[in-house]
Length: 455
Image (cartoon, rainbow, N blue to C red; front, side, top):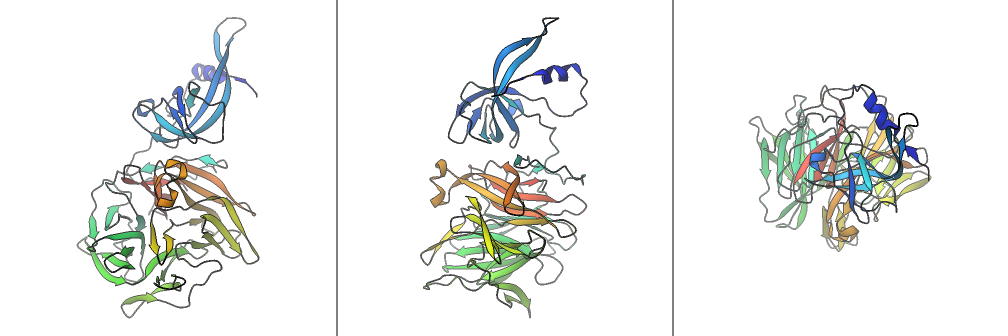
């Protein structure tokens, strides 16, 4: 194993500094578990979620041969990783690779952290950042305020028809509207579903009726009627959410091989060998919402929450779906490719006709101004109790991954530990500001927040 002397610290002290970055804190490893490492660096040390760290061991002291001055100590690097949770007196991280030499008592140093950007304010347009190193970690651009409920869905759209954006978040029986980015946890509008025990599974927002402002489509399980349905809402001129319609179908969006999202509908069928009805595009005609034509039929796809279409190689769209074992499958005309890891896990699930239906988070593809594919964003939710809680839909950690197409596979370009799990991600283009990836994050305490990342 190679060794390197810590001359860098000496050089930094001797030269003037023009950086606004905060100095890197150092401390000790307190404990290691199967996939977690506990550090004695908490909030007071400046530790932040998404910040990198290096674990090392100090060796012999180096002294200048002429002056006898100490130049520091030889360091042996033991491992490195990323902070995924920060508490008052300690933080919890994850190593980027197995490192048997990392044990309690080892030294640790945080990567230098830039001064934080203002939180809860719309980011100003910025020059394009350099491409991240493959598999590198990424900190959020901003974090919104804490919302006092576990989010089940999120959509972001122009609800007033004036070009501005609004954040729509749901819990199991309410739909809330906030500004974008949310400035506080007080919604500007709220819709409460009056069924005995509804469960909102997902949200969509789009201008389907053509009146210039987006409607909200909240798909839910109505236990009172024992059916899956969608409530269509609109923000009226008085700023209240009003119900436009109630549909006996699920409404779900997918991309069509471009940056455009197309809404579709599907009905669930009881007492049938297959509970899945045919998938149709959502249409609006003669003042009513309903199934359009032709039907949407894709190879290896039955469930409307399992797929999207992505133009990976700039020739024709491929069907990208989530398999029954939650692998990501890329289906081409003459073959397919699958990930080796599982993604898009969700606690939003329903037992229907002896089947467990998973209402997966969306996979979102990004394209540049020329329509060239620029990354696929996927969620990796991690179950509690070392994965034992996955069959029960209990998740307490999560990661956001951007996958780039190498020509033969999807490879991680960057990822971020988000502390909690995520039910929804949305690629957002704010008016007059840089594009960003908005992520709904649910923490272990049952509260939520909206975070945003440079895509």
